[in-house]
Length: 481
Image (cartoon, rainbow, N blue to C red; front, side, top):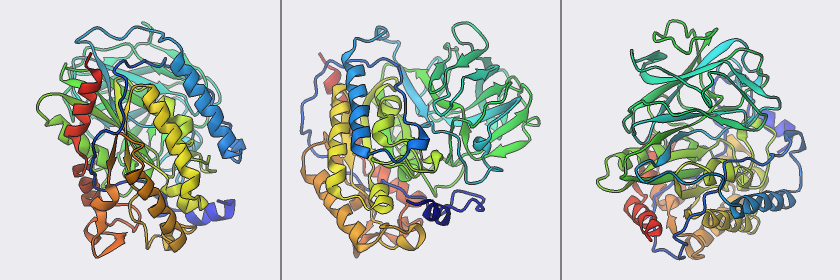
């Protein structure tokens, strides 16, 4: 995408993420029988990070870049774990995640991630997919070029807006210290705090940045209000100090919980804006992974936490000029999937932006899928492929090959491979779940957000199509001796 096309497609004058953001996944899911045996012994990759590509070099040859990334992933997986797995009954799982990206914005008033913060507190509002007896928080400088100084941080139960529930606030520490300097490209994991939380409960995670941060590591499209306040307000219970509402999560990449024994691991939804929930109702948790979380939270017996590793505009092959679209799926796979606490399974829904934005062919994308599958299996994860949803009618908004006959041809080819190759542990037919039976190349009108993204009802249909029993059973079986 040229810079002129970028400005046409994503005008900065719009007050919210423009209706031109590409997306990737959703649809009903039919999980088929397991195609591959996965070793029951799971090697735990170390929580270390390889260096991501310089955004200024976004035009590197994609296949040489991806080859290098997977060499790093493979090397990490072959090294012995740095720490032993927790004892039985002390299982940590990821209960909330937002894939971090470098600072960039379409609207600086809604999200000042392009300039960052100075002497301010950001209060991030997040909903957990699983409950537990303790929590710990991951603060990210993954998109930063300089060390990040965290002056204080806290976690509390969220009450309403920016307010915290009285008596629930806990100051966070890092190896016993109230402050920490986080290296460029890295993240910091807090010490656990004894805060009892329930599945689907909302937390307020506050981070005070005393010095100029520069462009802020963020998750641009949150579909959730968070808040800013001047000075250190990490201990504030009332919301009156938080005078500015923002539309992005800043410096927060995850919340883990020490879960009950019936939570057997974490399911990661990996993809682009369709996984990220673009066009879902703000502050209502209507993304398809949110609906999965609700189903899993009500499940009797063994269950999973679920986290969302979708990023608007994300692709399989390309680092796009808009930094808030993040690095390609292979480049972020280790951080956003393989090293997530309790990771046991992943749903992959990606490629529609490569087809629409870059006119990629199915034959270009299939080898990338195969490498992702290989890396997931090497880490002991089950991996499920989601078919790409219909997008005819979207070219007027998104340009390129979104919804063109050429783009549709490649979408159909890729979906055929996903359904028939037996490369995945199972297939989720998101395409079938949300398409119009009378016109299968288009979204069902009742599910249609903008000819490319589903609306709330469409995201629910995607989640309802996922055979969670099959995924949980496969995870439990693979963990058995």
